[in-house]
Structures are given as structure tokens and as C-alpha cells.
Image (cartoon, rainbow, N blue to C red; front, top):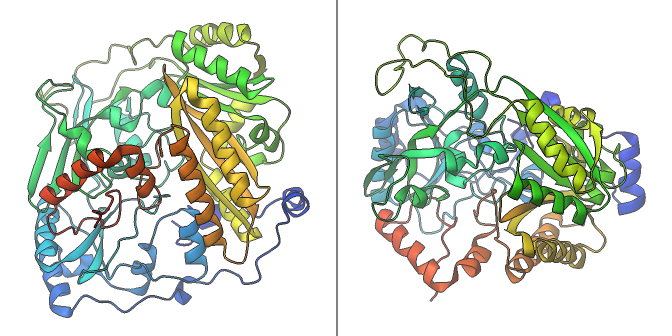
Length: 554
């Protein structure tokens, strides 16, 4: 991954001239006076950890897996939010870890946490490095130093239970690799967020990720049936059954805990049989309100597509649903629907050396996919009847296919806009259907108040019977201090979301950027519960300090 941007540097591209002209003429965007620095020019603080302590870390994982090189530290500094990238492009590596440590087993993770707790070394769990909420920047104050705990060596598929449709993974498996490992069994996770190409399964669980096909597969936390977690005070092994009435479900406590309570070292995930066919199409609605009513009808009445997203008028006009052809949008509001059918073939035998299932056998695939799935034709016809009744105009498969081709391209576009001199960032929230218009207006007004006349785009990204999420993209001209510019806007938006009754995050997580607003959302009793759990599991406070957990008030 590009250290100062997103993804594969070979896939970065220049903005088309018409887009540059739009930015210049309508937003006043001008190229930055100072170009981004190279990796070797990033300024890092000296390594604070003493030699004997680095040696003790090496005794746990092996000397080859304790890295203190300039490049290793830079590549584990911060995440991929716009403030993160702006700081890195300016050469600010002040938040770099002192060392990058790569454990190879649950036992090594547990021993590292014991050692770091005793020596007061802050530990930041690191998966794909894709956090966009300040989730990878530890507060080193009061600690002997900071390590990035890179889980990349924990990258195995441990077992597949074809009878229960449960697969056990280690946390460092990246999402594309998980799909590759499941493919021989005719299985899929069905989790395809925009970070799909680089994020890890452990990161998905730690941040309660939600994928683009959540309408069909559910959120990632819906997929987790079991977890093993190493904490400074011991190990948690959670999940004996899909559901239980045995008190509060501690799995839910660890999901979304962002490395503040413990380090996930194993996940048992519900998987689905891979579809035999996927098809995407577009519909146009006259207004966002009309399209929202149609999306709500599908969510509440069915049949619900696996993928369902609705762009507002501005996002449709810009063409953000098709980032590979930005600037090619039209009028109205574009809805993208994606349909999947049951598999057409049976699962293959397991790979040599990999357990097939908990029961030791490989049951035949019966041709049934997720409950309620039918043929693509049947589901399209049913959904089309609802969309047409609600005033939608069918556009055929071209818009859907264009969205599918560019579904992971938007972060590359963000990099190009930053390089051109624009401040561009995304934010998201969620609410009940009845409150969604108020929430939509509140965010837009807060951004306008903080940034003047920014370009604000929005789409409904995930839907439920009772509500939906709103995903905003904002673009404006960079000021002299673009980090401060965005932080002021973010503070205003966070306050507006809380005031308007929305949740501070639907799927990006809390990190540091949302921590104070999360405290306001929870209330003082809720905050005190989190603080008590933190104190019990991590008494020295070494795990991702400053993230998620609001500090005690004095």
C-alpha cells in the first residue's frame, strides 16, 4: 500500500482536465505550493525504546520480526484519513511507532501484551492500516514507547465447517485472500467494503465494518460467530453457538472495540455459498426523497437486492457512483441495485492438510444460498415492480456495471484530488427512516457553515427495515492549514450528528476522531461502563491508548 495515499501506486492517475477546470472554476482549487515529500524525507522521532526492551520483544517473536527501520516505521504511521494523509505528505511522522512487531501466534500476542503491560509500552494493533478515523495513532504520553503490533503473519484459514457454514480464520488475512481461500469450497464471505483490497478480517471485526453487499449478506459483525481475544489479563474464547441466552453476549463487547480491550487472534465466521450469478443495474428517481421512499419500500417489503445504494442529486450529477468516469453523471438520483443467484455447482473437496469441518466430513452443497434468495431474474422482477411503482425509471445494466468496475476506485480519486489542492474527505452516519431527512440536512448545513461553499455529495449506502446509513463526500479548496480546516469542519459535523439524533458512525468506527461525540452519544453512565471494562482487561492502559474510550473526567 502507498505510504502517503491509498492502494497500489501504479493505479494512481491524474485528474482529467475537465475535472481540474471544475475544481478551479467552482471551488477555487489551486495546486499546492509545496509538493508531497518522499518516504525518505518523512521526519521521525528517535526510537524511544531502550535496547534491552527491544531485545525482550525479539525474544518473544524472533529478531527478524522486530523492525525499527525508517521505512517500516513510516509505513505503520497513522491510517488513511485525509488528515493522516495530509500530515504524511507534509513529512510529519511524529506519530510513528518506535518499533513494528510481528507476532506469529496467539501465544506470542499474549506474551507481548504481558511484557508491554509490565514495561508500560503502548500497543497499537495494526491490520491493513485502512482506518479513516484516527484509529492508528496512539497517545504515547506516559509510556516508555509505542509499538505497532502488525498481525500480518497471522494469515491462515484454520478450518472450514461445511455443515455449519463456518470458517475459522486468523485476523491478518486480507479480504481478497479470504475469498481466494474460500473459493475451492464454493463459499464466500460476501463482505466487500471499499477497503476490500487491503483491509483484514481482524480489522473488519474490530471496527464493525459493513460491506457494499450488506443488504444481502449483513454487516461483518453479523458474520462473526466466535472470537479468540488476547488481553493483558488473559484470553477470551467466545462463541459456543450462533446465538445464546447465557447472559450478555461478550462477542458484541469485542466487536467494535478497536484494539482497546484486546487483540483478536482468531475469528469464526459465518460464510455463504458463492452465488452462481451477479448482476447490477441502474434506476433513476427525480429527487432524493422519492428515491429514499423507494429504497425504504424495498427494505421493508422486499425483495431486497444484495447491493442497494442511492445517490443524491449532487452525487449523481458529479457521477461519483462511477468514479472511473467522474464528471459523467446526469440529472435526478441514481440508484444501483445488485442481484445474486444461488450457486450452480457443488463445493470442491478441501485443500490437502486443511480440516474440512468440525464433523470431519464434506457434506454436499445442496444448491441453496442465503435464505430467501431466488434466481436473478425473479428477484430483479420483484424489485423492479416496487421501484417502478415508486416512480423509478429503469436505466438498464450499464450504470450498474460501471459502478461494479469502479467500486474500489474512490480512494484513488481522493488521492488525486489532494494532490490537485482540494481538501476531500468522507464521513458517515445512520438513523431511523423518520429522522433521515433531518440528519441529511444537518450534516450538509454543518459542512457549509464550516467550509463556506463546499461540494457535498451523499448516498444511502446500507439499508435496514427501520433505517439506513448516509455516506457523505465533501470537496473544498485547501486553505493554508488544510488539517486544521478539516478538523474544524469535522468537529462541527460531529456536533450536528449528535444534535440531530444520528449515530456518530455506521461503519468507519470511533478511533480518536469520533471519541468525544461517541461519549455524548453514550452518556455518562455508558462511558463509565466502557472505562470499567478497559480498567479490568487492560489495567495499565497500553492497548491503543486514546482510541475509542473517553478519558476519565477530573
